[in-house]
Figure: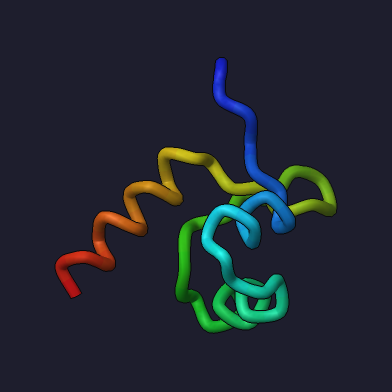
Length: 58
C-alpha cells in the first residue's frame, strides 16, 4: 500500500483532460476504473496505466 490513490483533479492533470470529460466517461462506463471511497471516487495508478496501455491497442 505504497501508492497514493489519485483524485479526479490528479487524474485530470495526469491525462490532460478536463474533469467534466472524466465525469462523463465515468457515467458512460468508459475511462479508467474508479473506486468509491466513501462519497469520493479515487483511481489506482496501476488501473490508470492499464487503461492507457489498452488504448494503444485500440
